[in-house]
Amino acid sequence: MRFDVVTLFPEIFAPFLTTGVTRRAFESKAVDVRCWNLRDFAQGNYRRVDDRPFGGGPGMVMMVEPLVQALTAIKAQRQDRAPVILFSPIGQTLNHASIEHWSGSDGAVLICGRYEGLDQRFVDAHVDQQISLGDFVLSGGEIAAMALLDAVARLQPGVLGDESSHELDSFNPALDGLLDCPHYTRPESWDGVAVPPVLLSGHHQQIERWRRDRRLEITARRRPDLIEKARSAGRLSIQDETALRAIRGTL
Image (tube, rainbow, N blue to C red; front, side, top):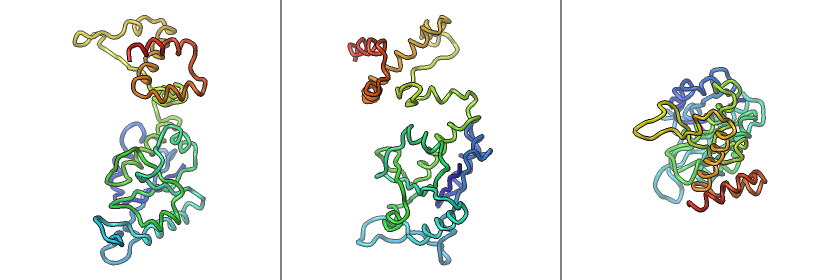
């Protein structure tokens, strides 16, 4: 798959694409990321890409023409109908289902906005979908773009050391959309706190039940909406419901 990133700061992506386990996806081109500097498509000696907003007010607005020129160059090179994605506070919140969709797609064109935003005429004419990371505002779309790319990259075959690792992540359907359980490693006792004995027992069924119960407990405490979603989808067993009744008494 190929993701073309339109940004004013392509240098931000260099360490991200060459560091950590996800670099395997980028270096192998399993996730082909190409950065386009928006200033390369601006006119004049100063390569201006923004101007004052009509109607007054603080800040600057990214101009239509450089964005259109960049998008035209990308589409001419791609020769496909890749969707154009804008990272914006008004977009749909990025979630696991969205990441799974993008991880199996042909990619997209990612627009990283800055300042007060983009001229709405570009958004109306060219943007297919807007995506948000949550109810807060970033200085630009670059961090959001890297979040999407990182999440997509780690789902590609051969990227993680253990192919099944991502299946045990929070929100994954393999966990019925629940939050993940706590994890422990050596030493067995630290600062007077011991690892839960069941994890040292070697009884795999008991260990899996303990982990499932902890997932249910954490999810019920932190994200009860996910419990209801799993219940509505018929993903909770009789044992799960029994554990949840016990958990409710402690909430």
